[in-house]
Image 1 (cartoon, rainbow, N blue to C red):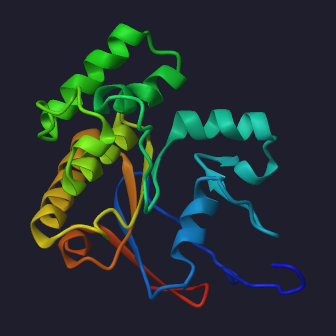
Image 2 (image 1 turned 90 degrees about the vertical axis):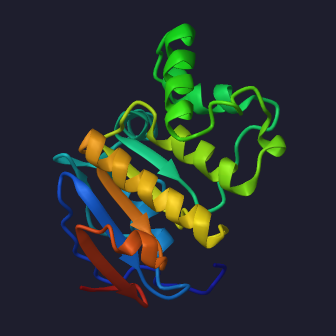
Length: 209
């Protein structure tokens, strides 16, 4: 940042399993979001390597990295932004359309998933016409549609009440078990932490198991 250098991740060495739910926790500013952005290739490290399914993504070009992310990752940021001009159904179908799935098939898959997450009656609504909990579930559906091998969720319950937090935690567990994917979740929420197969604690950019 200008002339100031901030070490967001400090000598991090981390090996994650092929499947399961991995919880990354730690205080605000500890490096959680930077870590998951690095894992997904959204931010590249100043030095070091990041291997995903045997591929060092730090050596990929911009086009190759974008293609790799599209095929391998579902990523939900802490403050997801659905496209306001599109319906909930169209928003959820987008990742499949980006992967060249025919529009009819993509919409059918999105409709089926939205029914699973309890939004079957909201498919034709715009994002600003649903509640906060429904918006989060729609964002989660958009992230996991097509069962990507790696799903990354950044604070998925940060802005939710306890009841909606519980629903999201149950949904995360159910969809991970169903797909057998690797779910990486940053959170301090007990309802999600209880579902973890592996817990990673990060503080001041360093990993503390």
